[in-house]
Length: 174
Image (tube, helix red, strand yellow):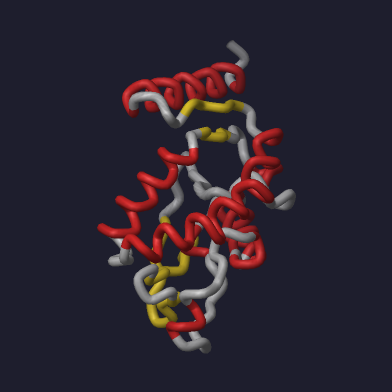
């Protein structure tokens, strides 16, 4: 879902870096909803590319997403938007303690986004946690399945596979 961050390319980097990318207002939900609808109708889509190190939507390129039997809509706000939820065949909420979330974010933001540790901690305390409490946690009620993201990764993966297989079996009438 992060690739659907609203394009703020007109702002200087110093201003873009101050924005709260964990709030619903940061998501181009109309474009995301249009793409989910288009995919649900059986059409491939071209999704935005986002440069997280610069907080920029790359305007001259998109990533082609060919039609497949499964589309995953992933992100902390995936269950927040009411207009998207009817398109989900299965919605999964992954829980994890704050310390685990912070550790995972640090690894991702340092390795993938070239962000300094001080900025990561500041963002986590000032934007990520408040947004999680306001938007993410309440959306848990819309999940079909809630998984413990603090468990070992193999256990989480096995639970995820079971949830998908159970949904497929239910849909097939077994």
